[in-house]
Length: 110
Image (cartoon, rainbow, N blue to C red):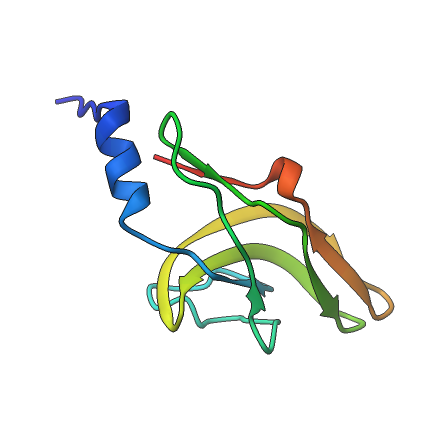
């Protein structure tokens, strides 16, 4: 059976969460979102209101990444409540550097 969720319902569901923190991870964040976390503290963020079943990051978010680390996942939080994660293309840091999550490219959709 194929499940279809209307755009209106997607907007309601996305509007029910208020993602305000982002973390980066070197591997799968796990069911609680804390596995392999590289970022401390988690960075503040703002997402747009839902539209067409999508919320978008409003401003770029930056993290300092230690030498020898690889960024593989992003996790999204509401305070201390983990909501979801997304896998990204591996970014390997041979030297300490900055990872910037770009608002133009960052969306959460249902």
